[in-house]
Image (cartoon, rainbow, N blue to C red):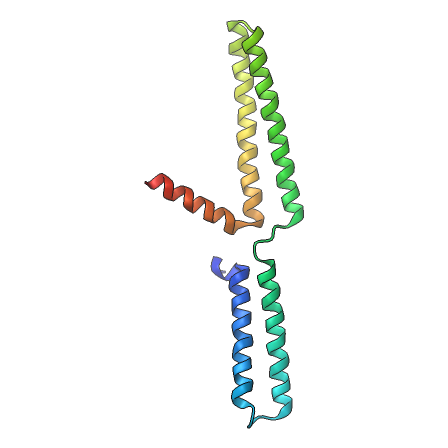
Amino acid sequence: MKAWVRKPTTQAGALVALAFALTLAIALLGGTADTLVLLLLTLLAGVFQFFGASRFHSAGRADPSLARASVRRLFSMAGRAYETRLSVEQCYETGTPGDAKKQLGVVSAQLSFIEEGAVQAIEDWREFHDEALADIEEKRDDRHED
């Protein structure tokens, strides 16, 4: 399925357009159609309007469980960054050149974990708000092309 078809705003727009088309059909058939047909068209138009409004309402909303998972990952990364900063400060203040080299290996590993966590957090957001990420990535790519 095309990406634009999956967008809630596209789905909502299509539902509202169907409701509008049915409303036009009711107006055009008003004098010639059976009352039951007009009633059915009116009910369908109302259903399409209701579901269209609900799709507009849900556009851009994040799934709370996925948002919580992403925030947990960000807190974990913040904790690891804090530990990394403390170990670098301690090495700077009290370490010898040999300790510094050993500590650089630890810092490198910790930064690798932080980098991996950041990528995973971005993928968490891609899972539940792909449109926002696509916009950000497009703007970032535009800046890098300049």
